Amino acid sequence: MRNKIFIAKTPFFIVGFALLSLAIQSCTGKNEKPADETRKYVIPDSLLKTLRIDTVQTMPLVSTISFTGMVDVNQDNQVNIFPLVSGNVRDIKVQLGDYVSAGQILGTVSSSEMANYSSSLTIAQANVAATKRQLQAAQDLFKDGLASSLDVTTAETNYGQAQAQLETAQRILKINGDNTKGVWEIKAPVGGFIVQKNITNGTSIRTDNSTMLFTISDLKNVWVWANVYESNINNIHMGDEVSVTTLSYPGKIFKGKVDKMLNALDPTTKVMKVRIVIANEKYELKPQMFASIEIANPENRQALCVTSKALIYDNSRYYVLVYNGHGDASITPVEVLNTTGDKTYIKSGLKEGDRVIATEAILIYGELNS
Image (tube, rainbow, N blue to C red; front, side, top):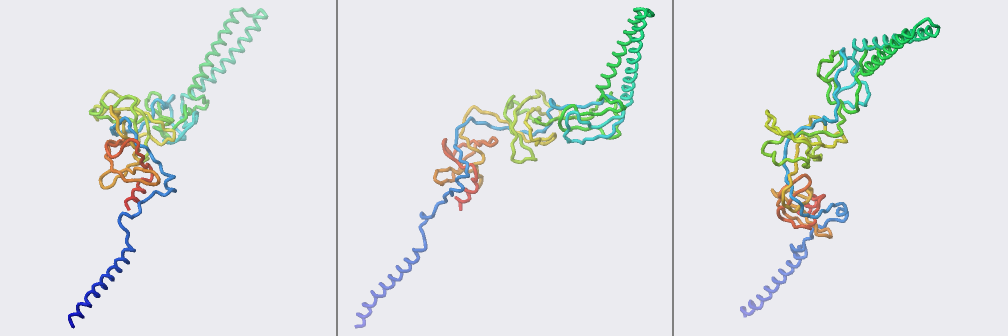
């Protein structure tokens, strides 16, 4: 009898325990989702409208060679001002770096030579007036029969010589500033910036001194001199495209071309100077700025190319975001072949025609990884 009761209760206990386990699993399953049901990040329409999406293209491969260099004035567009008279400098009106207009007075020089030029002009004017009166008197006397034709001819000659002396005195004075007060005014012959200044108030200057007083340049285009070492001379050619960057404008690239190659090595530095001409309408590049220079060197092969802004560097390798449409983007690792300015050549990871996100790539990359 006892054995029957024990056997009857055992199945009921097992069934109850099973029902309780199923209930617990059912409750737990409602709060968990399978891994494959995790929602994928989709680029919002508001962000999608602002994105730049570029297409991967096959382009001629261009490598770059880097050099150091220095910004210099365009010497073809500069004017050096030398002293035309001797004297003492006073009243300097400009400083290094000032912009001046053509004809503007830069300073004055008290000069005995200018005083002599002024005196010569006064004497010449007096001689013209005197010889003119003598000529009129000779002509009147000749009409009255009191003077000969020779007297008239002599008076005409003297008058002509006096006029020639006056014209010479006027020209000399005009060349030297046309000032009759014994002062030479230093005037700017052209408009531009004062890029050199070698005098101060009180300086004594002489015409036999070769030192220039001022140098003026418009700086609308400048020269950049690149230092090319002997191992790279064969890779530089006239007309090569050049990218120049400076410490003052990080991230900004100034474009130019190789304009001249000095086919001789500097005996001290053992480098060849290469001249690059760059437009400088905003006057951002200034003389004596240090410059980093990259010169393009085309190769006889092609490679896939994307904009450099599309690249993301993370975990010691490069990635791009391939756009698949409808807000869907995928992270794609790539192997970089070479970077030239704003272009990057890809060795592997992409194919021609792929579309890559070129703006806000880091933001979207972070969302895809989160």
